[in-house]
Image (cartoon, rainbow, N blue to C red):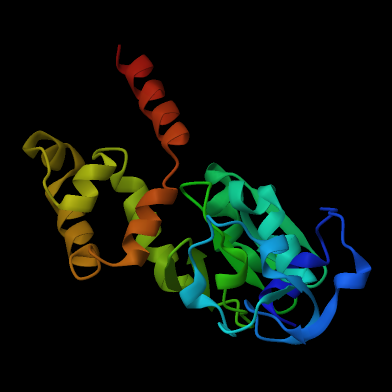
Length: 227
């Protein structure tokens, strides 16, 4: 199965197809020979990912790819999917799904994460079979996600996030008072852990999924107890 075939079977999106215009040919996007419709009926002039198409010379796009491109919910939500399940979820739920992915899916799967809620992820996703190390498609970025390594880093970041802002963690420019509140021992471990990955897409992704609402609740509880 292709990435769009995995998704398409779960989508309820319905659009009119003139059956007389369906052609069995190669899909511009996935490159598979199957039932297709004309490109102009499947995508708009706003489509900009022509460089990622598998069969660039084709003027047709298959029904599966068309359904994925036309489904607004796939652009507005994060998702994981295999042949049996599709889960759509919001930013604060990313942590749960990516770190516990084997709770939700059992077969070959894809993972798509959005932050602009505008770009297509569906046809860009790699198909994964390993729950310990898999690819996450975050719009234009492809992230190789080593689950155990990422979880170790994330737990340290999650603790540090109670003392530092996301910008401080991203740039490495900290307030001195926050460093001492966090303790020098914890700070040394933090910097040792992230110094070599700070500019990577993996690190940016882990910072992105840190839960601000949960952080603010914990900080408010601390203020209430101290004050």
